[in-house]
Length: 254
Image (tube, rainbow, N blue to C red):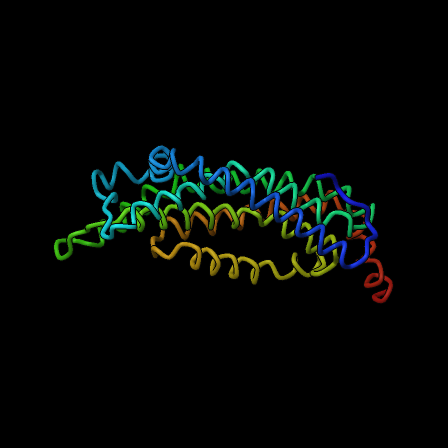
């Protein structure tokens, strides 16, 4: 569907939302059915880094309907991944008309950046976090407990971590729009960097519930690095805006 004009009556906005939701639901629904038949391949890809640790474990089902529901979950996961360009486009096409022309010029680039950052976060987790986190959790069984892992648990663990890292890597986009829309001025963020670092460490601990120091530290370090990099980028891209905001304070001091 094309992007609609900026000005529309309220009911037309509701109708526009309904049409775009229909497109998203139809695309995800069809891809989910396709993904259902490729659920074995999706599962092996999803938990791939965990397999060297789990071996034959992590594929058990304890309920008659569980295998079928797992396949649908895997199919929907694959549908969201493959259909994400359509989902992103339909979402942006609904909100973009409400933006001013000056704001629209950034929206396409930041949408692209958001997609690439999410992929980077997922790749970071997939390559460096999933296997050591799984190893650490398996080792917690020690000699007392014997791990009998359900496929549903392994899937949920991998999906949670991948999605969490992908969203956590959106820090630069969040920082850009906080400064761009003057929700939090650049000077305030720069002055309170210690608070921001602590908040990011807390968020990293919440996203990684395995209590593994490696996964928490890696995510916190990545988020802090992205924050500092985005602050430098914002300083360059929004230099005029930042100087204009700082000018009144300079005049008052004089």
